[in-house]
Length: 125
Image (tube, rainbow, N blue to C red; front, side):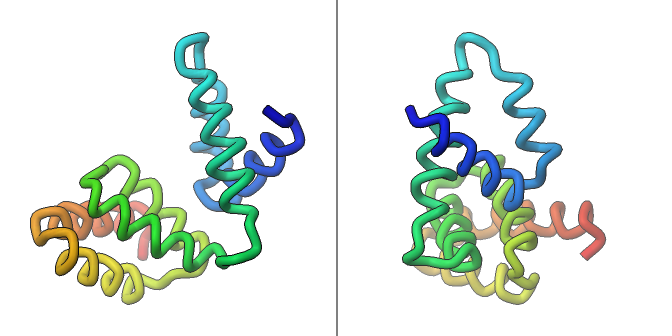
């Protein structure tokens, strides 16, 4: 793994998800899950999020839809915060979740709406 790609990924990951969250995840890594943290940081955030083909807003919208489809509430919560940091509005997030509800299933959308409301309350939005 390229140290340069890890550093690029770490920068983007901090900007999108917040330095406090990312630094805590990295600092909390142990021998078991450190390779996963390195993989996620280098490839997800370094390779993919740094590609020029899509802006961060669009990537956030895609992530919210895909994570809703996969019914991954912890990641939805994290990426709702990231979507706000990337400039999405509550209304745009609502539209993404409504779209996902139709194509991925209403129960998945209900969970994502509930989680998004929690994040909005935490962020005072």
